[in-house]
Image (tube, rainbow, N blue to C red):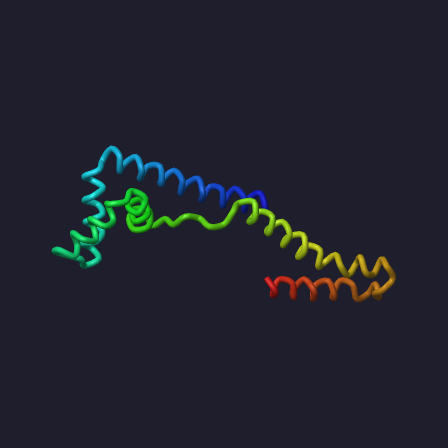
Length: 134
């Protein structure tokens, strides 16, 4: 599961980076089209006239700002803020901790602390509590 979580989050980062590179390429090679796309986005939002031109001029004055606007407004993408390794590690820890719950009663029993007849129901109850905790 942690490998799946890692790969999923890494794919999100890769997808974002791919579109980021495309937007920078478009600014360099399709400048006028990109300016019109910014204008169209803000016309849809209800801006018009001088205010529209001020907003467009402010956004296109900085390529990084323009790319940020296009990523969020045109593509609906925001930069992933979670690190793939941290996601994988937290998933691994959660699976180990929650996976140990049903076994915990048997470990305690092996140490001589529980009645053998109550192990299975206790294991089920603790597992249910673990799932509720999740």
